[in-house]
Image 1: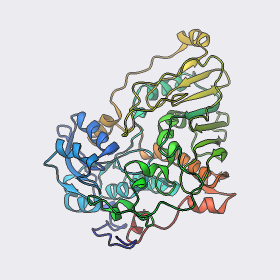
Image 2: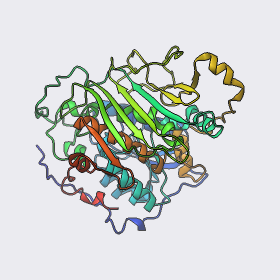
Image 3: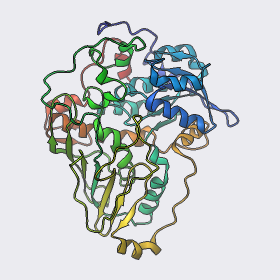
Image 4: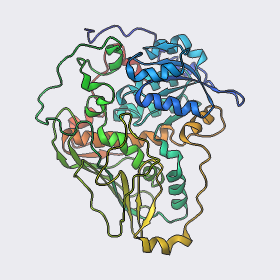
Length: 463
């Protein structure tokens, strides 16, 4: 078995030399040369979406489990694309042929790939959430600012669909104003539901599959013995590797409210209710409260998050039926399982109440009588000029600006990481929004950064 200090091999660009690498912009007449980190499960879906735009040339593949069953479909579709198991080796050998990279890997390994790519002047499309920890999001934002010509996009794809343009238009027209509370809910079954919450240690070591490079899978994280319940999406269950239901769905449900209501960071996050809390994996149900202060002329807002099959939020009178939007993509494991309330949000303002779904689902005013009264006052919503994947590639060619760049997606991802800290520690957190420190809990404040990276990975944490 590989040791915790196993060799970390290829070159990492020296922190002081990173800004010297020119950004690679594709010409208007050319396709974007795209490298792909993570080629199975969600990573494979991202590759297909980017390829389907007709704007990408698939230049390289990187996957630590190359040849495993979940990677076969992509490998068969692109049999001649060079293959790597280490993203650093891929960038070392092919960096001058790569203009952009897609990052469809577990939450915890988003960070080093994005940092390495930006340092080399390579544009980044990374799945949500942007990174696992508050500090990693902070460093990614600083790096994106330092390497200012690098295009970045976080993969909350609804941020380029109808809800994005509707929410923006309704805020600008004064339809959405004076919001005081938002309920966000995701009540479908999750991978860890039904697990024994009396767990006292992490799962035991198991034999590592022949196709998997376990040491490279871990990237910056402290060493863990291999267990099948860490890989192929199971990593989302564990505080050590993922951000649970909130990190998975929060960026799809709260993204437009966070941006267009200028929420920024909360001043208080509270674990209101946790069922099945333990030190290792996420609760069976969670109710979390995020309190955001007054912003300019906008009143304070409390965002309340509900997950868990039976942990349903209160529903306002006139809510009506909650349909599952067919535009919401299913998880890599198959269809979204039926829920008692489909993923979405309820937005309460001083005058109006809005009901919405997830991803690109549009808002409606409730109750129906009020919607009819407001119909003639609603502004025209512009059509979507490009989906999220096309938007990214056009930005790599200098023809558009991305809609979820790191300076927009970073604070949203930090909100999600703060919610996870409240879950993990089962407590209330008070945040100094300006200093970006937790003032009432030393352990939580230390976890904004987390444990030191494994030996050989430290340089990624320098900007």
